[in-house]
Image (cartoon, rainbow, N blue to C red; front, side, top):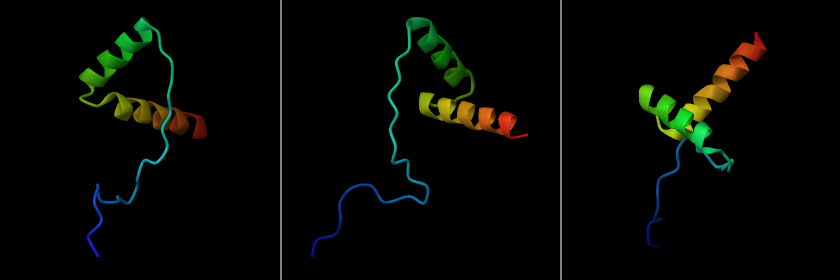
Length: 58
């Protein structure tokens, strides 16, 4: 048998995809925050979600 091709599986695979609609101002703010935090846009949004969760969970 031939070996499997593709990316190796990770322990915490991101299997879900979310599509959102943003206006130009929203996109500029996201770009700015991601750049200042040295994160990708996806990482920036994930950080926001977890920060929000933590603040609500107190």
